[in-house]
Length: 120
Image (cartoon, rainbow, N blue to C red; front, side, top):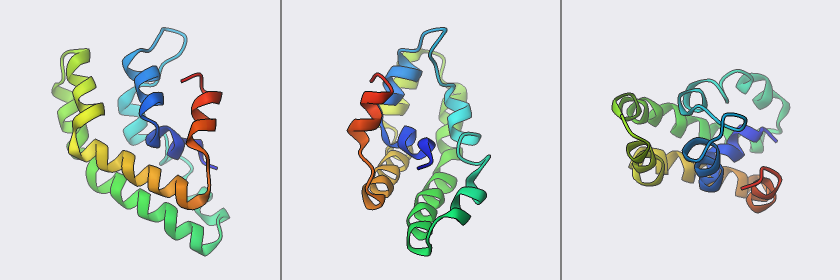
């Protein structure tokens, strides 16, 4: 499983590694939006059965359609509280997270297991 989709789906992960990051354990929000899934997306998709490829492609479409609007808000966010508002309440970010959740559920992955392994 491409763990990036799990990262997009987990509010606990985003809270832990973006909003409550430490210098040893952190995720840069901008990298998550633009780099995490794109780098190996095509090779990952090609490894999947066609029905699973369609499920992941649906998530990718939501991510690509909405991330620029999320990033526009993130660029002007000056405080951790503003970033928190994006992660918890921005309709575009919530849609991305929900699409990721839908994707992992359809693929049969366990979000709680991922969060436990990640220390969320």
